[in-house]
Length: 130
Image (tube, rainbow, N blue to C red):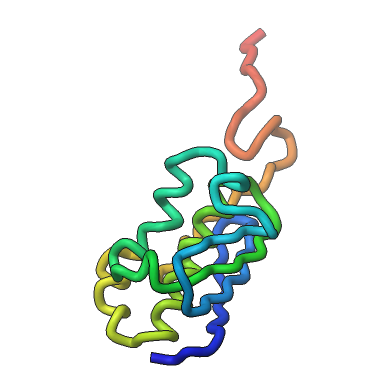
Protein backbone atom coordinates (compact mmCIF):
# COMPACT_ATOMS: atom_id res chain seq x y z
CA UNK A 1 0.00 0.00 0.00
CA UNK A 2 1.24 3.45 -0.93
CA UNK A 3 1.14 6.32 1.55
CA UNK A 4 1.21 9.09 -1.05
CA UNK A 5 -1.59 10.89 -2.85
CA UNK A 6 -3.28 8.76 -5.48
CA UNK A 7 -5.02 10.40 -8.45
CA UNK A 8 -7.73 9.00 -10.72
CA UNK A 9 -10.32 10.30 -13.17
CA UNK A 10 -13.93 9.21 -13.55
CA UNK A 11 -16.47 10.11 -16.25
CA UNK A 12 -20.23 9.66 -16.60
CA UNK A 13 -22.58 11.30 -19.14
CA UNK A 14 -20.97 14.73 -19.58
CA UNK A 15 -19.44 14.91 -16.08
CA UNK A 16 -15.75 14.57 -15.25
CA UNK A 17 -14.47 13.90 -11.72
CA UNK A 18 -10.83 14.27 -10.68
CA UNK A 19 -10.18 12.36 -7.45
CA UNK A 20 -7.25 12.48 -5.01
CA UNK A 21 -7.02 9.78 -2.33
CA UNK A 22 -4.83 10.31 0.74
CA UNK A 23 -4.51 8.25 3.93
CA UNK A 24 -6.71 9.85 6.58
CA UNK A 25 -9.90 9.66 8.61
CA UNK A 26 -12.60 9.32 5.93
CA UNK A 27 -13.31 12.95 5.07
CA UNK A 28 -14.83 13.42 1.59
CA UNK A 29 -14.64 16.89 0.03
CA UNK A 30 -16.16 17.77 -3.37
CA UNK A 31 -15.28 21.10 -5.00
CA UNK A 32 -14.13 22.43 -1.62
CA UNK A 33 -17.36 21.47 0.20
CA UNK A 34 -18.19 18.52 2.47
CA UNK A 35 -19.96 15.66 0.65
CA UNK A 36 -23.45 16.31 2.05
CA UNK A 37 -23.23 20.05 1.33
CA UNK A 38 -22.50 19.40 -2.36
CA UNK A 39 -24.70 16.31 -2.95
CA UNK A 40 -27.78 17.08 -0.84
CA UNK A 41 -29.64 13.84 -1.69
CA UNK A 42 -28.84 10.87 0.56
CA UNK A 43 -29.06 8.47 -2.42
CA UNK A 44 -26.18 10.21 -4.20
CA UNK A 45 -24.09 10.04 -1.00
CA UNK A 46 -24.75 6.29 -0.85
CA UNK A 47 -23.76 5.87 -4.53
CA UNK A 48 -20.47 7.68 -3.94
CA UNK A 49 -19.60 5.70 -0.79
CA UNK A 50 -20.37 2.25 -2.29
CA UNK A 51 -16.78 1.40 -3.36
CA UNK A 52 -15.44 2.59 0.01
CA UNK A 53 -17.95 0.44 1.91
CA UNK A 54 -17.22 -2.59 -0.25
CA UNK A 55 -13.46 -2.37 0.35
CA UNK A 56 -13.93 -1.38 4.02
CA UNK A 57 -11.86 1.75 3.38
CA UNK A 58 -14.46 4.37 4.40
CA UNK A 59 -12.48 5.61 7.42
CA UNK A 60 -8.98 4.92 6.05
CA UNK A 61 -8.74 7.56 3.29
CA UNK A 62 -9.53 11.23 2.81
CA UNK A 63 -10.96 12.04 -0.62
CA UNK A 64 -10.65 15.37 -2.37
CA UNK A 65 -12.54 15.65 -5.64
CA UNK A 66 -13.11 18.26 -8.30
CA UNK A 67 -16.22 17.66 -10.43
CA UNK A 68 -17.29 19.51 -13.58
CA UNK A 69 -20.09 19.27 -16.13
CA UNK A 70 -23.49 17.58 -16.24
CA UNK A 71 -25.98 17.24 -13.41
CA UNK A 72 -25.68 15.89 -9.90
CA UNK A 73 -26.52 12.30 -10.85
CA UNK A 74 -23.86 12.21 -13.58
CA UNK A 75 -21.35 13.83 -11.25
CA UNK A 76 -22.05 11.21 -8.58
CA UNK A 77 -21.49 8.44 -11.15
CA UNK A 78 -18.23 10.04 -12.28
CA UNK A 79 -17.10 10.31 -8.66
CA UNK A 80 -17.94 6.62 -8.07
CA UNK A 81 -15.73 5.57 -11.00
CA UNK A 82 -12.91 7.93 -9.95
CA UNK A 83 -12.90 6.67 -6.36
CA UNK A 84 -12.96 3.04 -7.54
CA UNK A 85 -10.01 3.59 -9.88
CA UNK A 86 -8.04 5.36 -7.15
CA UNK A 87 -8.67 2.50 -4.69
CA UNK A 88 -7.36 -0.01 -7.25
CA UNK A 89 -4.20 2.09 -7.68
CA UNK A 90 -3.69 2.04 -3.90
CA UNK A 91 -4.27 -1.71 -3.51
CA UNK A 92 -4.57 -4.06 -6.50
CA UNK A 93 -6.40 -6.56 -4.25
CA UNK A 94 -9.53 -4.39 -4.40
CA UNK A 95 -9.86 -4.91 -8.17
CA UNK A 96 -11.79 -8.21 -8.19
CA UNK A 97 -14.56 -7.07 -5.82
CA UNK A 98 -14.93 -3.65 -7.44
CA UNK A 99 -15.01 -5.21 -10.91
CA UNK A 100 -17.67 -7.77 -9.91
CA UNK A 101 -19.85 -4.94 -8.58
CA UNK A 102 -19.40 -3.03 -11.86
CA UNK A 103 -17.69 -0.02 -10.30
CA UNK A 104 -14.70 -0.11 -12.67
CA UNK A 105 -16.81 -0.05 -15.84
CA UNK A 106 -17.26 3.29 -17.59
CA UNK A 107 -20.97 3.76 -18.40
CA UNK A 108 -20.95 4.59 -22.14
CA UNK A 109 -24.53 5.92 -22.37
CA UNK A 110 -24.74 9.46 -23.70
CA UNK A 111 -27.60 11.77 -24.72
CA UNK A 112 -28.91 11.00 -28.20
CA UNK A 113 -28.71 13.94 -30.58
CA UNK A 114 -31.78 15.81 -31.82
CA UNK A 115 -32.75 14.98 -35.40
CA UNK A 116 -33.90 17.59 -37.92
CA UNK A 117 -37.63 17.67 -38.68
CA UNK A 118 -38.39 16.47 -35.14
CA UNK A 119 -38.92 18.34 -31.88
CA UNK A 120 -36.52 16.02 -29.94
CA UNK A 121 -34.31 12.98 -30.55
CA UNK A 122 -37.17 10.48 -30.90
CA UNK A 123 -40.35 12.51 -30.46
CA UNK A 124 -42.26 13.27 -33.67
CA UNK A 125 -44.55 16.14 -34.57
CA UNK A 126 -48.23 15.18 -34.47
CA UNK A 127 -49.33 13.35 -37.64
CA UNK A 128 -52.34 14.74 -39.48
CA UNK A 129 -53.93 12.68 -42.23
CA UNK A 130 -55.90 15.70 -43.60
